[in-house]
Amino acid sequence: MPEKRTMERAREDAREGKAPSTQAGEFVREEMEHIREGKHGARNTKQAIAIGLSKARRAGVKLKPPAGRYGEEVKKKAEQDSEEGAHATRKPSAKRSRTVTQALKREGHSAASRKALSNQARRVAKQRKARS
Image 1 (cartoon, helix red, strand yellow):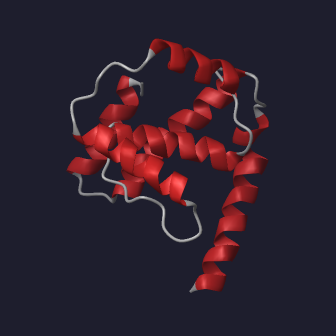
Image 2 (tube, rainbow, N blue to C red):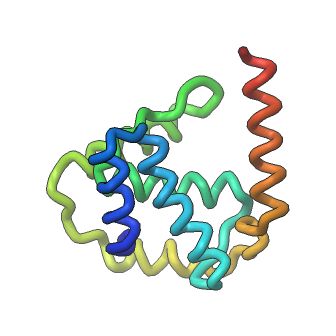
């Protein structure tokens, strides 16, 4: 469940007419903070970003499913998250939630480091140049 402060920031971005990706950025930022604080970890920066985007979709941010090179499973999950955000949210399964949290706690915390974020940004920027 996203923090109240994050929801408020995302709503403010929506009111100002900012892009859905900007609104979702607040959720990604929150996720990075959680990893740095030690609440849980992530295998890599890409996973940390994906968790934040999933939270954003479930909170009602109208993000499109990922395009291109991502598999069908990823696209399907993104659509499920968006659908969840469009309807009234029901309480998540306690057992599943606990299991996911335990799994993430076993992961490392370097995925949210400045260096890891910088490397991720550069990698994505390189791909973007080649495609355009």
